[in-house]
Length: 331
Ligand SMILES: NC(=O)c1ccc[n+]([C@@H]2O[C@H](COP(=O)([O-])OP(=O)(O)OC[C@H]3O[C@@H](n4cnc5c(N)ncnc54)[C@H](OP(=O)(O)O)[C@@H]3O)[C@@H](O)[C@H]2O)c1
Image (cartoon, rainbow, N blue to C red; front, side):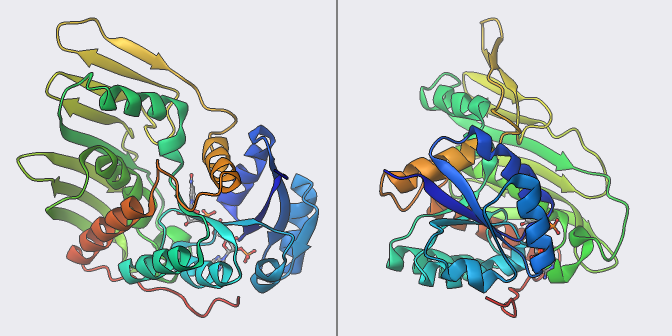
């Protein structure tokens, strides 16, 4: 099959990291980049040797020469772009958090399934070689029945109301930006929860600054998680089973190694660094799945994305943070 032709929508900070990793992705070409400003997309295209640049999102969505779009705008702007792109028959990789609201996520999933295009949330953690091996060990039963997941992810971000992370219009707050990693990890190993409990604090703009989240997965299985913009917590994780434990060192969301300790045995180090910065692995997944004619990833399926989104919005709303989609985006 021909190479898969990728386009980027929203050439901001993360898009630069992802663009640099395309050199590690066989069968994929970064062929286009779209910004709300023709100057910004042209500058990005020049930096990364991208063939085409567009001065609006609508132009790249309408271009039949592009197969798949990577949406790297802030969370509330994913919804309108994704729906327009799906209607145009584009496959999608959508940055985390998938959307700002549960209803928005459900609409994208329904539209993707109706149209038969591939859509995946860009939860790159699940594709890191170390995490792939961790998952394999857990599925093989090496640590027994998983009973608990513990994880934290915090940064010490100076308060600035114009910063995306503190701006409600850009889906600010720790929950959608960092909480999504700890919640997605818990959901991957523990499934669908029964109840979520949360305590936290808010920034002056009204977005969540930090949260301690306790998720009840039934029968005593639980996840205890922390996300914060107020403290640079280490960013480590533990998966605890009846027969052993897997410890993922900082920063657990893109690890180069992990340690598995089965009770009564010596600890074993899983050493599997990522290719490039580590975004390459999710790009490989999407490229290969599209080539194979699939509409979802088995590793990051849309059902998991919906479950994670429900937990995130539930937790945010318990803290008094009610996100909304920005459907004013020009597509
Ligand atoms: N996987 C990861 O490691 C990782 C890390 C950081 C962030 N992310 C995710 O990536 C997304 C973007 O984060 P970022 O840090 O790259 O943000 P950013 O630097 O602010 O870039 C976002 C881009 O989106 C476009 N955009 C469209 N509508 C916008 C609006 N109303 N306000 C602001 N920008 C708008 C802008 O590009 P134009 O105006 O030029 O079109 C902007 O450059 C978020 O969903 C975030 O969670 C992922």
